[in-house]
Image 1 (cartoon, helix red, strand yellow):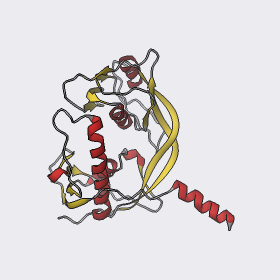
Image 2 (tube, helix red, strand yellow):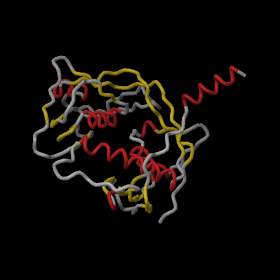
Image 3 (cartoon, helix red, strand yellow):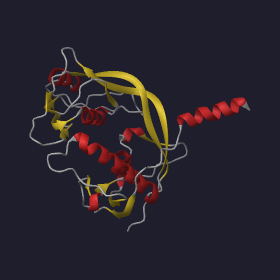
Length: 274
């Protein structure tokens, strides 16, 4: 009996249900996206809410839970239907509590983050109620990258006092990243998407920065399902992203292993339109 209880405790510590969102929505609308629509957008919505265009369920999950698609896996027994990634939806909601956008010049990354987290929780509630989404969360030991300061220290320049930003424009196919008023959290999020691994900030660098990073484009096929594969797809002139980060930003992407949250899809349903 004691062994059974220990086993049950061990399993529950590795696979848990995500916490219920603390924020919700008043009214939500979901429609199928226009088949001719090619762009994907997530932005401000009615009455301080949120509106998305042509977003798949997978895109909505990664936004709502602040994860990358390689962290969203299939639970045992779940056969992911194709529509989860392929079908686009236009989703909008009004918040359960009033939200006000920061005034012009005050929309810094730090000021926007708490509101963004509330909107993500509201989207979690929409996914639960309208898509019937059920998830389990596990923590696995997986390959990651840590951002640390390179030899000689950080070369990041403090953001200009222009009131612009925060913004970060990235084109991995070209190998270019331009940041205005961006912080380290934004940088790690972008690197995580490019490198297909979680990236954690251990640089000790604070503040907001303006910079431009250029590198030789590579394809990275890592992530929990295939963590060891890193195959350059394009051979071009220039430095790899690892060398560019060191030489241009004074930072270093250090490969390690660490705890990574993965979200297992237990169930999901097509929503009813309204």
